[in-house]
Image (cartoon, rainbow, N blue to C red; front, top):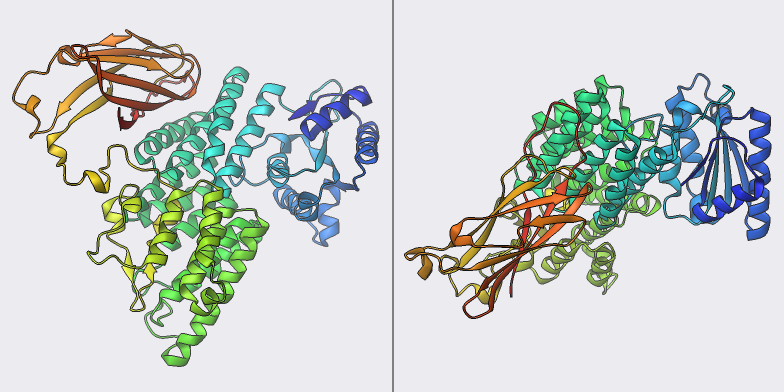
Length: 596
């Protein structure tokens, strides 16, 4: 991202735009700034042979025909106008008249009125060039944050977009750079949002304990800087963690919704309302039809297509699975045999609407799940395409969602004779969630709703089918324990390593042999000492030199024979140094054991 605080040389500005595809200019009178933006845009458009579009924020209310728009509503109108053709087809877009206060970018979906963040989100991954003019009448004043802080917000926005798309793998590197940028800029608010998005990313990856610790840290930091919308988002994500175990917490989601409403965050309140409705949709007598309709209206008010798409998806899912009750204690006008057909047609219309919106919003995760549920609930639709499973599997594969591919495999294969879930699902999801998996009389799976909330990786050490004849209690395992508080840069944190034999292992009744544990840092960190002896209580000091995710490797060897017995990798999240008084519980390392 590039920011130019004052009018500069035209050629230099053009070079920055061509390099970064985004140029923000402020700190100049309206006429000079607009003329400068137009000159840069014309040069780039002529040289690249692209169409040129101009848009002024001040015109947003007039173009819509609605008077008295709030700044947040005007910002939403600008972002919505820039979606669609401007993003899909390469062009040069000039958005002028952006208020200086609207340049304080907040990650997508976290607060109304963040115009710059919304524009970055709309143009993320596009081939278009975006020029933004920020108004600021004060001579010599910069209309935008410093380069380091601004880059940090842009990185957070891009990371949030990847999470929204269902591709959290791409968010990790962006978040590490964002943490560094905010720390250099001394932006505690930005650091809080970075920690929050780290927690959200961990939840999406199925790393529940890491997510819980990071979200608690983020919530405390939001409170420390008075960021009420952020506190509400952190509470909502913490509440959603409960769905992974198959037991959602509607009360906590309702509280998150109230926090959003008190903070004036309409978009956040809409999302909390949706997840509260989803958590209760399968309860007998719950008025799900009315609630889904209300949620859809909320998302329409804030022009959130992704939220609308997920609302349609879950509304359709409820319709397809219902027995005819409308959620108000009786049967609606869709009861009986004819009503079943009508419900199916209505569900099909909702699935189709959700699919179209997911495609417009470029959300392959939602698109794949909607394709799968639509195919399962509409046999006619499925049998029109003999390659339906391969097509859906391909979409999941495109974002690295192996768990999604496993659900497609299950849908194609049908229930197993012994009733046990396939290995690829059993090694990723908690048993409590898989216990809620059901089957229709036609042999179609009723996939738990919470399955689409995460993309979990295989659990370390989970026995493969070929290992199940070797009881786990006859093996020895490596246990890593973080002994200190939250790891922060340049402060040593102690890690204890133990070799824990199972009750059937020979070492369970005899002293451990003098094994050697060798420690290696795979990133910007030091670990000391290089070797330890587990029998004597091996302890290592881990000193990271930057925030972000750090990987460590521990190799356990038998020095008598030179044999490598086991190798374990741990991933530790290091958060920026917190000048405040609160230091919550540390995130535990995530071991990834493999046989040597």
